[in-house]
Length: 178
Image (cartoon, rainbow, N blue to C red; front, side, top):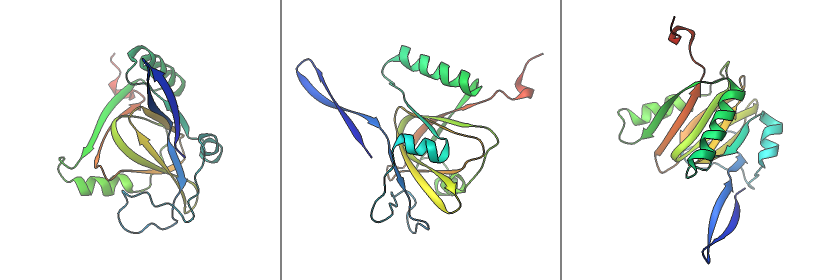
């Protein structure tokens, strides 16, 4: 479901997207994994339903407001006990692009929360609340999600073939000085 907010600024209206798209996927998608793969008829879900089904938490980060962005990230990092980050850029220009996409699309279950902010571009995270039942989450610039530990998930880009993600991680014990 895509929601829009109409904002008037200096006599002009423009659209602000404030809700990501979330839907149930085909049970066994065939073909290009970068396509939406809706079930038929399409079955979208809300952010609240996503949380109830999977525990995934969503935040919208205003990337143009540095102060608000820093506050939001600081709060999430504190709540999730993450204190380091890494930038991940996926584009057709990286070596072994298709192999990397294959690796990221393999379902994985982590023993820590997965905290990711889309800095630029767009991607899909798929989460599996039940065996062979996948929910696709389309993320764009400014979308921040937290996938709880123990939830099976996978990742791929959209047909744009470009995304830059900041992943937040706990500091590793061997990285601690002294």
